[in-house]
Image (cartoon, rainbow, N blue to C red; front, side, top):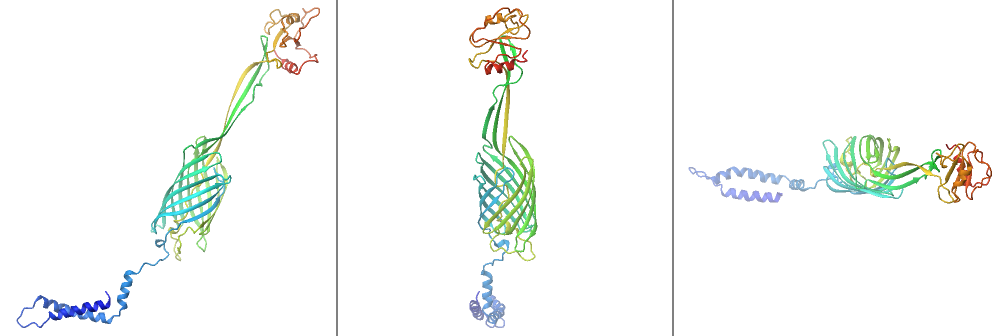
Length: 458
């Protein structure tokens, strides 16, 4: 109440009290109004006197104290996380090529100093100009007592390798502190997680695989044929990774250096599962720049050196934040940092080869006619039908059954055909060969090859 209003109220009160306070005659009983007037009149004069003694600024100060808006102190409880955009590059790592990234971070709901619901998205362009990306919704709650945040996220990832397109669901938990950080991420491919990108078939054709053999009037060639089918596939790998890190240095401007170590596990159909380890250092010289260097190794993808660089605008920390001297940094200032996870889907390239061998005996064929060669066998002491098992005893007998179709060969095996006397007429297109020394200079190339096969034939 202002001073004039207070004086007016006290004046009216005094007038009323004066009317109700005549001298009480002796022997009369005091009325209730008289008793109240007697009790309230001295305090009323005191209040009026006090109202006159204190200046108007007393009431003004009281009013200002009740209505003045709160002033920002730069503490976590007063500051809001702001939207930001950024860009950067990640080098090649286990299961993915290097990629450039364009990213954004948008707070959806927040209670400054308490919690934050946010949306984060990335557009990825790998070294082969293939496009991918991810989007996630995350939540972080802030505990002032512990000066630590606790949060999690769920997201969707997409990757085009140039030959295949994969999709993935991501899940994760995290806790950020002044010194210690810890993170757990999970990756679950969905849809067609294994795709064929190339295939080929190789056929050696029939190849001689042993010594030829005679059977009846035919020459059999032992052969084998090898078929080989090669298929190249790409498979998206499910996985988990965990890391623990700590702040190891701090710059005068508030920048910091943090070191992290962790393990990861990946598995896919058609690929051996693998467990690996990773070490990395993260440097934030300013609120607008971040750098990273790391090393990872596993039995499937080998050893990879990791490098990252990125910039963001505005900074990841809330605008107006000021660290109190000799006080730990409020973790609310880190609530706007990007979620740390593998941004690209991990893909393994699989090469599968299947081969089988077909073995068979082929009948030697005359290339000129396309018909099988017919061998009429002659050997010393033979007296039968000219087959390998029952040869003729004389060349005359062999020539007598040979036909002039270009496919007959009278073949004289080891030993002399003593029964042949006098001249022998060989029909046209019939060849006379022997297991002895080659003497005919007019043989065709096919017959020369055939004779080379016949040497050593039982």
